[in-house]
Length: 216
Image 1 (tube, rainbow, N blue to C red):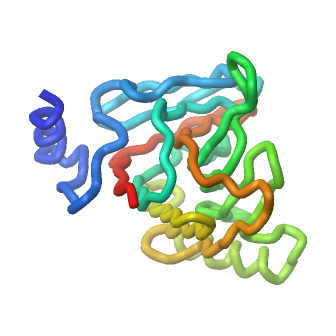
Image 2: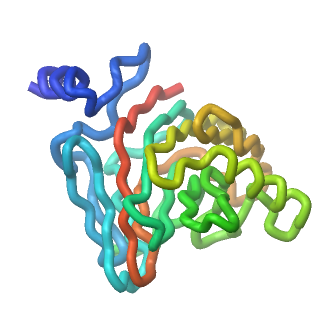
């Protein structure tokens, strides 16, 4: 049944053609294999896409995978329906103890700020903050912004690729590498979940599609 559904979605253009070694992380129909944690943002499925929305969101909200992953090549597309709110994709994510523990760990930034344009930067959610670029290095931050402005599609789909091999983390945006980072710090995380983010704030409206993974 699932194979038939995925084939139909591929033929309709809602999922990409099969890539050798890759498996879908989202079935294109419902949120089986995922669950919402932390805040009060909302997640729905529309036309084979996951849509994250929120108005006056009190705290960052995440839709996380039930399963965890270690080393992988992960690919997906995202777009903002409007630029009213920030977002991101957690990878090797963790949760603090408790029934609804705070999500923390590596995040691929989805930046809605045209003046900064740090989409596909590496942020350490609820831990160390920015890893790439180094926000305290003015030259690096300026160059990262300039690259981002050339690459980002503000009103269309953007292709993201994240590759993790042990401590080596890489992120590409629309075919160009943005992050090449080796985490030698004690906070290094070898395994965790993926999670989509609706950021706290007045409004957020973002969507994702074509999520697929090759475990390495």
